[in-house]
Length: 77
Image (cartoon, rainbow, N blue to C red; front, side):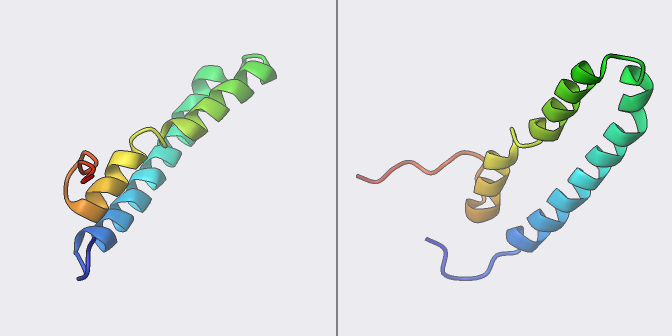
């Protein structure tokens, strides 16, 4: 358990916000050109997928922010 402040949390939050901003801009800029003429249901599925796919690396990123390692710590039992 961490008892002192760490630089990784504010840097990680700023990095996460910037990465999401860039990702959102890229999706908003380039995806409509590709799928704009497709069926609305297919577009909905693609946008739902793109709206959730950024969550995949989030667990490891949050672990890094808290521990400084990219993998979860081993259980001490």
